[in-house]
Image (cartoon, rainbow, N blue to C red; front, side, top):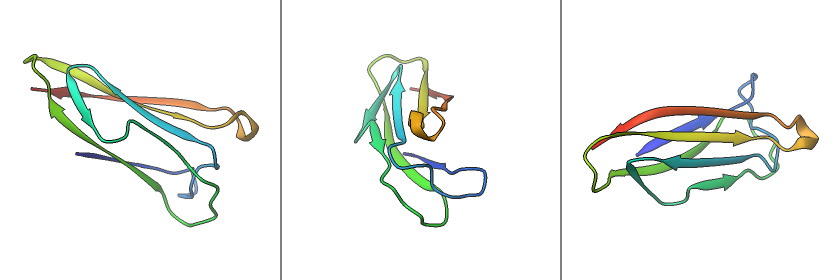
Length: 86
């Protein structure tokens, strides 16, 4: 299981409507693969957790997280990847 903690530069939540999505090659993703944040004025980062499991092909693949901030809040898209393997 991987937990992604995401915040703005002041450790606050991202704007409401920001989406987190995860795709994987060579790994099975359990649970939701996307999440849209509500409006919030809370303090601290937001967490998005995904469960990863091996698939039927023994090799290494990639898990990619994409965070998309709505256009009204800057329209920023950020992507990070890490390896997963069987």
